[in-house]
Length: 531
Image (cartoon, rainbow, N blue to C red; front, side, top):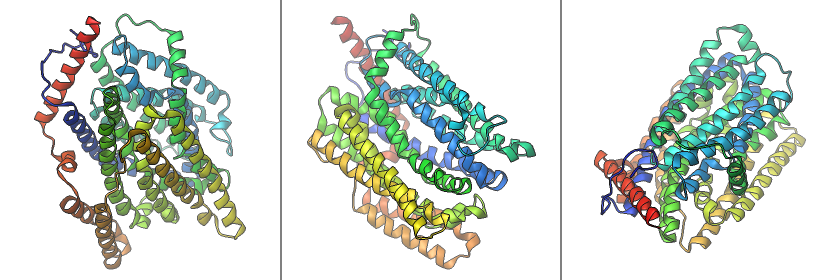
């Protein structure tokens, strides 16, 4: 009997780990790997921001940021919701899972081909306020690389392979873009036109795709007997339309602020905001990386109609994410001027921006984790809430910019308007989605605990001490000091046995978890053959 990846799986009468323990162990392992991935991604992206800000300049970085915004939007649409919908398709598979993955890649390729054709033919969509030339059109080819990488990593996460996500997104992609941008900066023509940033981005996305496809083929093998099925592909696209819309709206909630800003202020301020956004969205990878791990666990619980179990998972993951992001937000926000100063002296004006954006990521944690369950139990109402949130964000961002402009405030102040609007819109989304999920599951889903507030107070005191005692050139010492104070209080006063599972799972637990999963897959195949 072969499993989904084409390898042999033995049938075990009793799995080594019960389903609830296996699910929580999987979530803990995924969370631990993602924290490690955050550190690696931070180490890789800081050099890129340093190179982009100090060598290419704020204006070139802003132009690049807007173009990437458009390309990533096209990639989101091309994926047609399969980043999170693939788990459901694999769980309900009526044919080999390798064929399901191949169908998903085919659907994404069709959508990406259309997106790339439009962007290559109409490059002004990527560069609306600046001339198009050089290698600007080259950026469009990353549409298929981004969408395929998302689907490949989702397929791997279904089999608990989170390490590939860390390798692709946190090691390969950030380090390739940093190294390539630096190597290309020795050509003055590349720097003056900003082509170095574009080529570096393309190389990094292609490298991330290769790093995702290699383990994907090892896991699923080649899809033997698979034939392109356009009819099935179209049916998959139609079925996933609500999920694709939810994915696109969630992505847009982190990008529409930059789009609105680009319509009102010069490119240099867009570049400063982009740098602040990159710093602030680094901790966002903690929660988005949980999605492919949490999705399959929720699907299994739904098959058992275990809604209380889903609520417990949501509470636990939300707590982990809020705690981690609160500590990171304080560590990067309190010495925010020094952090932004790493990018360049011209970027220190983005201190307020990065503070609001970091706060927004903490606020968004509840909404994002709740949505991981809502896309299966109330996808249309979830999408409606997301659309309302997006409208609030866009409208409020434009209103705040115009209000500050009418008051005669400089563009640096106006540029904080979208970040403030993001905080308010995400607060609405978190409250609405957690309330809806609680109604659907019949159990509380909030991950907030007061020990986070006490840990935050310790972090603030540590940060204030560093700000007070150390000169400006040593303010970055506040980052580890704040994290240490925050973590110490949280570990001693807040974390219980289940919380510490995030840090204490050993190799034997992983081995037992995999054996249990193989046994479950084999058992399901036997039952299907009998039916």
